[in-house]
Image (cartoon, rainbow, N blue to C red; front, side):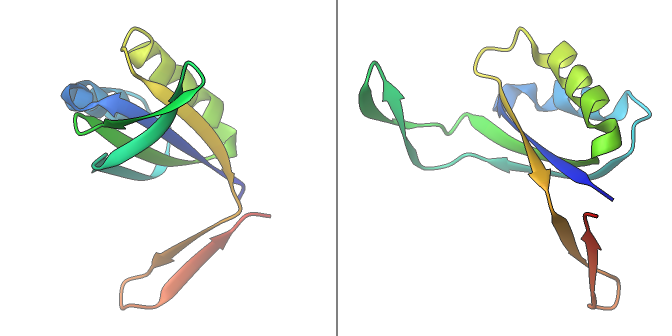
Length: 111
């Protein structure tokens, strides 16, 4: 199974809308991770690297099959196209390792 990881940065106040977007479609999502973005991040601003604290943002990672990734991206774009600070990156995922029940690892490798 070929997989894609969709990563988004959203304002933390958008958690409720994120839950609605994730649950209001029938597309199979393999995994979802949501974590706060804490710490100091350096980013280029007008050619200079500036430091800022992004404590009011969350990082959302959604693992989907490539077959459904375009539809999921469309749902996210529709749900958050007006959200300031929303960023999305889509990455290919060569494999996914998860612990199966009982503690043994279960590998899902992309073909």
